[in-house]
Image (cartoon, rainbow, N blue to C red; front, top):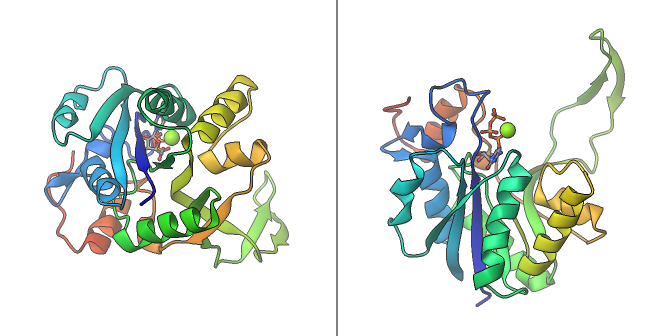
Length: 233
Ligand code: CTP
Ligand code: MG
């Protein structure tokens, strides 16, 4: 079985959520979003350990230190990519360059085992890094600054990127570090690998693996998880 490691960037402030605490710490059915994302990663085949990046001043980091011997904690950075890089830096010390690493947002608590396993299986089979994504289904409009439609964009071949995103550890670490040093704007791991000229495989995912971003998203997450809402911030 392929050796895999997980990275969870969980150092964001959750500004769009507008709660008093970052969204990864919001309770949903008795577990935080982060606990759910962590469990999903830990349950994947070949998972050796998961590194979580927390904001430097996050008092909740200590809660995760002793939950599972496979969980490690590092300090995140100003942007998501800085948080991911901090975790990769840590992994570089304890893992092999050709181990796989799966980077998964703390704010995607509904990742189904079948989707994660499909990603691992297809990436390992092809020997090429990849990500879960969904084809775009809506008609797309390009809109000008005054709010008028400029054009209808052809959606054929357009996909919405999700996480986990899975790459060889050594390659992702060096490409991401180089891209950030170069001042490239990196929104996900795949964009760094594209910048580095590496092929990236798209593996079909599910709508349930959406990113919780605004308060209404919690209802949707509860629906997908089959639970009642409780105890939010
Ligand atoms: N993240 C991180 N470090 C940052 C910024 C974001 O680890 N400096 C993490 C978030 O905690 C989240 C994931 O990256 O799990 C996706 O980011 P996003 O959904 O944008 O979360 P926030 O940045 O927290 O939310 P917002 O943009 O609304 O402030
Ligand atoms: Mg953000």
